[in-house]
Length: 353
Image 1 (cartoon, rainbow, N blue to C red):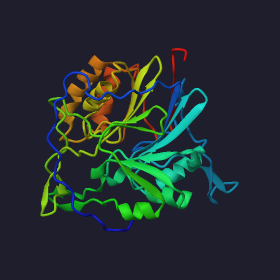
Image 2 (image 1 turned 90 degrees about the horizontal axis):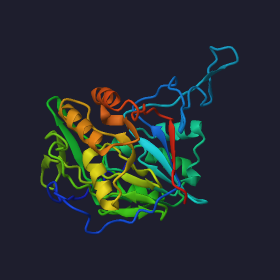
Image 3 (image 1 turned 30 degrees about the vertical axis):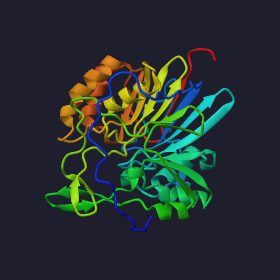
Image 4 (image 1 turned 135 degrees about the vertical axis):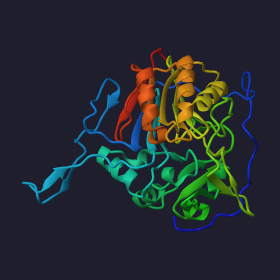
């Protein structure tokens, strides 16, 4: 992705929106029999985390690499961990199975390396969905394109994914890499822009589109996070392209997968429930964006609201931050699970179809 095409982006599409009551246009999200979430890229990898019912950990069983300093000339390899996120989400309804790639990590090679070590076949992936345009969620598109060649693949994004952004820091500004529509299309990705909720592959996978902001504490990014508005840089607190993936598992409720969770994980869960009319929360995976001084004040109210909602499984990763991980693990000892690159979680329906 070397093209520097940025174009003019709209500055903002509104402030946080109050969304009381049921959704005006609810989404009928048909329940599935099974969902599997395989974490391809995360900030953390631990080969000693044990597998459990419904959870498969790779350990050191991910293959071998040449290393002549060892007898036999090889050594076991694990997963590549980096500041980024990527997951393969596979759902089954009856005999029909659909697989979506949600985000692609930071570097061009980490996601495809881990996928190869796990035996994940990208030929089974029917579409790519980007949670938002930040580079630590889109960097692996380069490796995916090289692995697949120029075969056509749908890519579902929010229209603001092309936004030019920077971090205005005291020590110097850092302008983030900006995605190029032309480069993506040349590599075979069929770009589908959707601002509103939509179903992917007609297989019980919902992409939320823009998330309604209804909490009083999830304010988004600090002023240092900025976007280009055509004539200059302005604060971009909302990251309006932030969206999540939602699946409804029969008898258990919603499974929500976030990228960074810039909209706030409580906002995202509330939005998913309001869209679908489903009041049960089965699991939440992905970044909760509670790391760092700007977001740590949100830890306590996030824990409080998640306790009110209730969840069978919480697998926070990526940008959640160690303080939030400790707080969530302490508050939800039976629900919290360690996210680790290479881990696969499977949830099956409890009600007969």
